[in-house]
Amino acid sequence: MKRYVIFISIILIYYLIGGCSNKNENIDLGVVADTLKPLIKKDKLVKLLADIHLSDAFLSNMKTVGIKLKKQNDYQKFYSGVYVSVFKKYNVSQPEFYKTLQYYSFHQDEFLNIYDKVIDLLNAEEDSILNKRIRKK
View 1 (cartoon, rainbow, N blue to C red):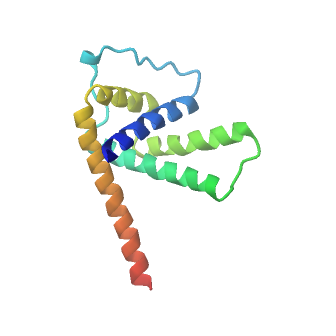
View 2: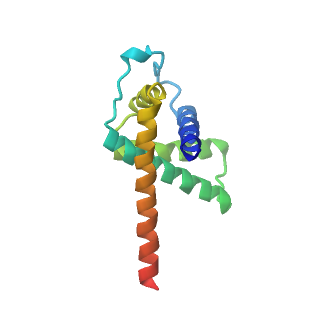
View 3: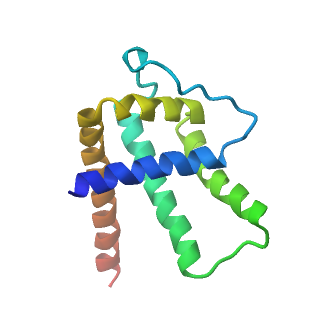
């Protein structure tokens, strides 16, 4: 069950990032499934997805504590900027990310294995943070 919730959340992230992209970019996602290839290596994709989820948590926390931007346009620029910075960190373009996600939409077993690694990475980071807090006390 947890795997499916994560799978659905990545699909939602896919559409969220797509909505924040530059409208002048033409991303052709109408490629036949058999010709698709993941453009991002699995190890890199695991780290990228983990950082995207951390970015989502950051953005969600901004809403929770009531940090607001003055204009809707500023809000969209800020959100898309957070994701763009993650892509820059891993030297990945949005089209590469989209096409990789499209590949994995046809190879869900592989994608679930990748997400198992993403979950392990996020859990390890959480444990590391908790251990640092315990040591400080």
